[in-house]
Image (cartoon, rainbow, N blue to C red):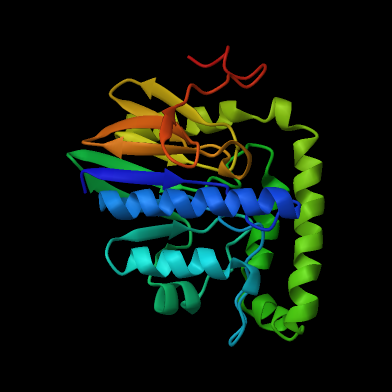
Length: 260
């Protein structure tokens, strides 16, 4: 794989109808570009603001995106790393859409570079409570019990709480602890990797460290940013619907100045 695209935090279903339509249009045009280039794609979590598979039912509003993903997956590898909004991925994504699903982390080798990837939820030092909740939500018994809810109840119910969680997080987004993620990525680079790709923070990042890079594709759901690794070198872009425009990430307030 000489060229790999990385996409994170699209959060389909999170916003009002106008923005959702724009997000879908931009995403489908982005998929068409990948199809033309015959490149591979890694979705670094949270493609959906909520995803849950019943045995016979999936959310209908994402039909067009799922259809195009199936088309792409028939001709190339598409890896999907579970995020904190869409970790209930199951057989539908694997068998019907053809994606390669990873519950947590994934490592690949490309152009002589060793790339480590995960969504990144739970990496913050103070995320102790979330890490405990994550084990509860991924418990097979609890998943079975949730499937007993009718989809017309279960899906809107989960979306409601997803919106509450996101709105609470947005109030403190200007001080999001990007520093923890950089320290984690830098430690992984010093350990054995050349490129570390994380999502979740909604802060696009391209930070060199020693022989490698920390990369975060950023918040596609609002900024339409994404990352590319071509011949072992990472880049950041923003998608305008037709082309990728080079993107220089903003510095999160109060977080980067202490990174060494």
